[in-house]
Image 1 (cartoon, one colour):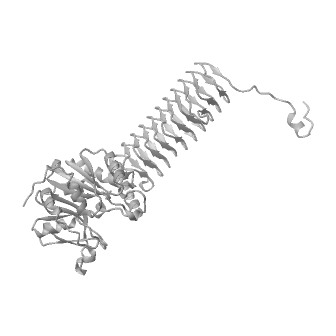
Image 2: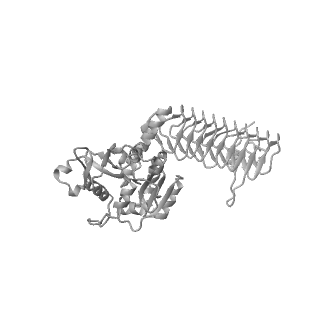
Image 3: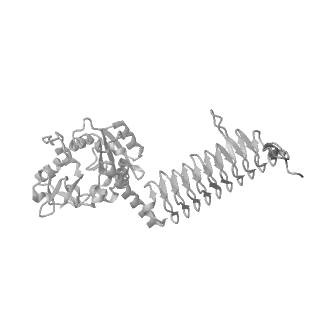
Length: 468
């Protein structure tokens, strides 16, 4: 009996990604839909990548250009795409893929592009099937209605795949089903793929026919029984939500095992693309997505949204929304702050309650305590940007910069009319409207002198003013 596996660099994977996904009722191709921060196709590619296979061929069809571009964007070495047009079944898709598989690939693994719960361990078992042996993934289902049943012989080899509609009552009682993913020796696949006919209700050519031919020829076909969760496909939006929940649960579990504290996993949504270092804390109500990174010892939440944001070690972000921002080590944000794209907050800096910052750099130790707006600004270190101060950066046509030097103090309710610069160490008095540059270490006051008119209010009401 053969025991040696084909070296991984001589194994090719064929990823089936040509389908439309009609039941999703979407204008997008099925494999482009996302679950837990990745498309269905990228989940499959992410599971394949650690195997180090010699080649990955993605078969595209519906919205071929979009799917091919998306596959290439994953950045996997050795990945190519081929177009299946027209789409005449899974057997036809594999035949098209074989035109792109290099001649030095000795084994071909066929996987579906809409199975985001596949793991590298499951795919490794398929890829490492001994040379000369075909294999297929199977799973046991409580309700296998509608699935092809896997029938085994006395030696546990697969002897047949019987579709539900063709199965007898005894065969329908079998709970082991075909997952539709296979491993074949290249030579045997080349020989049999062209012999597949389309004599069926759909007029299509199915890859299961290759298994039938192998069994008929006396070749060994192994059924690799795997957890049913790992082979779950996505056919509608309800299933899309279900696999997203499982993917997030898996990722949170891995994070917690690595040393991240998650107070309430059920109330914490973290994409699989998010990286979190040990000793970080996630409080309930967080939504963390994209390429977000959270440093060691940081505390995020409750009720905080982070997207493509870097949170430095020991930082604190509470009840805030941050998109494509950089938060330095030991910095604090919130509650109820809004960090828009391009915000960079330095170490030990602060952006407080109801403050909004956009496309601005804020130096180490600087503070924007609350109720302020900062846009298109460069703020040095140790600056106090007080309550109600605003960079007036937009004139209805263009955006203009504000520059504030190290150690400057911007008083409450100040309007900085950009473009304008406040020098290092300068003070701007509260209530000022600054239209001209302020030199270093100067005091700028730009407000009208207070005038008091004694008795005016009483006379306005038609009353006599109170005597002195």
